Image 1: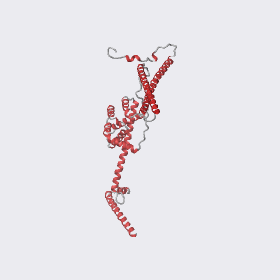
Image 2: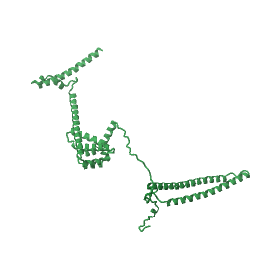
Image 3: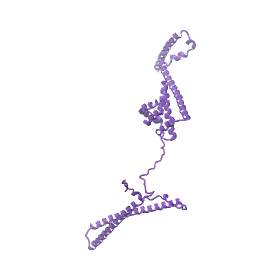
Image 4: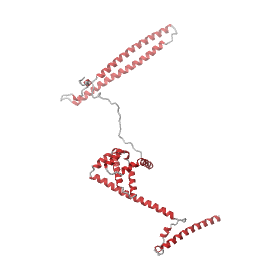
Length: 354
C-alpha cells in the first residue's frame, strides 16, 4: 500500500512477456519464444484439466452418495416380516450401505478440500498474455449488403406519393435554397430528404415552374445537388444519408473540372426541363382545342370551322366574306338539322316495313 492509498501488489504476479528477455545472439530467439509459449500453454492446459477432473469427481461422489442414501432408506423401510435369515441379510445389507455412505461422505470432503486448494492455487497463478483478458462475448458481423428486391412501378408510385404527402413542405424549402452551408444544414436537420423521391419531386417542381413561366434556376440547382449526392452514394456503395457531408466538403473546395461537371449537368437539366415544359404546354393546348371542337360539333358530327376552312380561297377573300360566313354557318346548321330529320324518317320507314 502506497502513501496515496493505492494497492499495486496485484501487479507483482504478472508473467513477464517472453520477448522482453535478453537472449544470447547465437540463440534462435523466435524459436525460443515459441517454445516458451507452447510450454506455458501446455502447463495451463494441464492445470485446467486437473480442475475439471476434480469437479467431475466431486459431482460423481455426490451422485453416489444420493444413491447410497436411497438404498439405506429402502432397507430401513423394508418389511421386517419373514424368517430370521432374511432379516439378518437385510440388517447386513443396511450396515454395508451405511458404511458406504460414510465412506462417500469422507471422499466428498476430500474432493471439496482439494477443490479449495485448487482455487487458491489458481488465484496465485501469475498473469500472462493469455490470461490478462478474456472475451466477454464474441460476435461476427459480415458487411454484406442484402440484395434489394426490385420494386414494381406501382410500388414506386405509392412510395413516392406517400413520401411527398409527408415531406412536401420540407422538400420545397430545400429546393428554394442556394448557399452550400444552408443546404448542408437543412439536410443535417432532415436526413430523410436525401433520397430518390426528393430528387424526382424537385425535377417535377422545375417543370411546373417553367410551365408557369417562373424562373426554376434555384430549384434546378438543388436538383443537381441531390443527384450528385445520390451518385456519390452509389459510387461508394453506402447509404446516401451517410455521405452528403462528404459531397458538400468536396464541392466547397472543388477544382475546376469538378465544378465544370456540376455546371454542365445543371445546364443539361435546364434544357431538359424547358423541353418537357414545351411538350406539356402543347399537350394542354391540344386538349383545349379538342374541347372547343367538340363544343362546335352539331348532331351530324360536322365542324363549321373545318368546313369553312375547306372552301376555296376565293370565297375566303370575297368582299362579302363576313356575310357569307354567317350565311354559310346558318345553312350548315339547317343542313345538320335536315340530316337528323332525314335519318329519323329512314329509321321510321324501316320499322314500318318490318
